[in-house]
Image 1: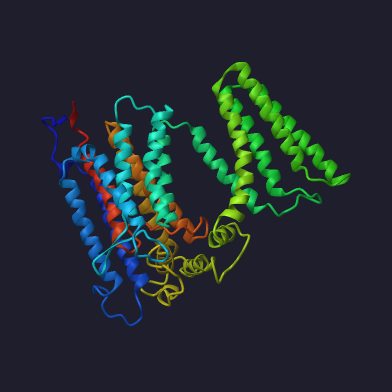
Image 2 (image 1 turned 90 degrees about the vertical axis):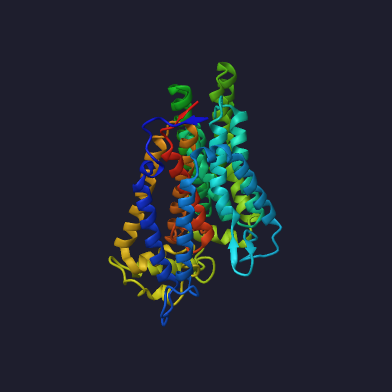
Length: 490
């Protein structure tokens, strides 16, 4: 229940108009980018509904109308019906798995009539955010309790599994962004650090696996990863157990003994030093277990699990990459890591996108004057790779301006989330922030060749109604919740 205070202003006066202004600016720049990406020499009417630029105006107009409707609803509506909205979207995701219509190998689209296509995965983001906010704001919730944390994981994993079954892996990965919100709500930093460490192990290990260290038969990738595992483990001993002596013992013994055997392998008898590192890691784990049982501190058990899991993850990653992943997925990762070039195959999109962005120079070629995009060299240039159009036509200055707009949006969302008086609004706000941040970082990164090509849209820029509506739902529901922050709840 909630009652309004006597001096509580109306909804429109309570809205954060700065965020709405940023939203409208992104819509305008997004439409200009769609025009540039879809325009063909000789077109006479970019406003025609037969063109993508014309249809994008329809999606923008309907999005603004949807935003207005979302603002007119009572903010308690989203709290009250969170689980129902989530259940409805889960049902749509489940039904879509059996959809007979395939678009580019994916079953993620519901085809309504002859022309309307909707992607439930785009709408499930705001539904998942609402369900998380509802559950995490219940009385007695504690993210440090495994039962509570397991339920929050289930809320995220269920739509992810359904989307993966639709063969839309890229959209499923977006749901990992909610872990950023967990961190704000008290998730131990060790979990986030474990995820970052796993990425480092994978990139360094796979990238340098075939490179040998000096004149020894030792893989540089394996050598560096095992050293990192030992150093990371030692530092965690100091951070979580305050055992400085054990930390230095682990680092000095592991690094020192490894260095001695490396010199022996280089100048006396060549052999794989990795075997020595594995033996040292085993000794380290045994030492940690002994300390865990001696002190009965749970942190030692966690650190032991981290060390064992790190080594197991690294050696399983190579197997997954070469024996589990599909060939096209393996090629994409190898291209990203620089192990393969394949400019005519998996690396073609990124290569052409980099050419388009580079050709824009400082100030760009001007609106509708981009040659790479007009001649259709870049596949998906008005959807997943639309940022290359910004780079070619608007240049470095225009690209920087767009990124600054997104930065302003992110910073504004942080400000709005932090001023929420109740956990429901804060959790939902940080969920929205996390989704936007993930989309911008991955989309711009893949266009520049810095992140894997997983096929996710750039918010408010990529052509299409589902993504634009989905992002509008995410943002305007939060704006409505923020507008009601001055209510007193009983």
